[in-house]
Image (cartoon, rainbow, N blue to C red; front, top):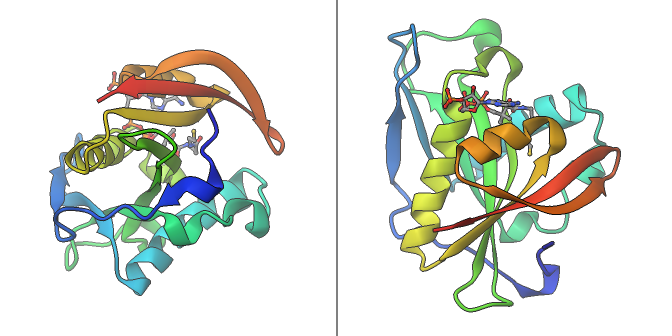
Length: 183
Ligand SMILES: CC(C)(COP(=O)(O)OP(=O)(O)OC[C@H]1O[C@@H](n2cnc3c(N)ncnc32)[C@H](O)[C@@H]1OP(=O)(O)O)[C@@H](O)C(=O)NCCC(=O)NCCS
């Protein structure tokens, strides 16, 4: 199920400016999900991932930011620029990346490094980012998506239509299982 690092092709969004609003329950703060294409946007996505996977979950920088990074297309969930700030003045609340493995035709879309800052969980940002990525992947011609689910987040992936494959593995110190979804 693991992608072949040698067969990654850089995903090109049909519309790099594409974005979609996120309805935050119980809040009128305007939030959105979009591709992170400029260097500062990619850095913002890395910042969210650093908070979640390095500081919170104990991955090292080297484990988190791996060799696939240059071949990834990143997404950000964030408050709309210019609106009220959030605790810690964070405007960027979630991140993820899309990898395309061209071993099969059409390529397989791998959704990975999905992360939402702790205080912003349970408000639909994880779902919004995955749906945004899958919509983009479909437009890029993909017909199948995979995600390596942390066992503690397996129900989240199932709610989004990903089926556990039974293939379990350790990603360093964190137990995972591969999941798959037809697009
Ligand atoms: C997993 C994670 C990305 C989910 O993001 P989120 O923004 O909190 O999730 P959402 O609010 O979009 O939840 C969507 C649905 O999944 C459910 N859900 C969210 N996290 C869940 C979890 N850990 N277990 C079970 N269900 C979960 C929600 O209740 C919601 O259900 P509903 O649509 O029926 O109401 C977030 O908890 C996170 O960043 N965790 C730490 C990093 C991590 O584990 N990443 C996953 C790597 S595989």
